[in-house]
Length: 160
Image 1 (spheres, helix red, strand yellow):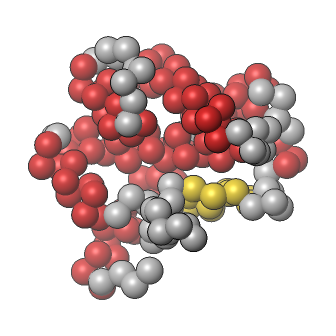
Image 2: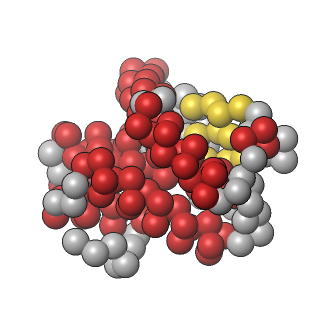
């Protein structure tokens, strides 16, 4: 994807927020718990990379993450235009919460693909369940948090 030079600062900041979020000890502990609970061997994960720019899959859809057969996970940012739309609807801190939640969800999602490779529905359901558990325990469950999670998962199933 060709990124205008004026957007590079946005993508650098997005990558920094993503990296910082995924490396927080509380989230790292949670990921270890998920791996143990799902009986996913850590050695199947060879690398996790936060990519700087968004990308599309072969069908043209924007990706949040990918995992290779070698166990390499790549996480991609949301396009700047999408975040600007969110900023028109929500306060800045809620948009940052969305970015953080999206990063956590993408990592959990790709990790679950190690066990449920061919079952996208199970991966999506478990991703939503696990992230909701983490968010509820760490941040509580206010109405705006629930709204952000619904946007993230396009879900009606998240109870507020």
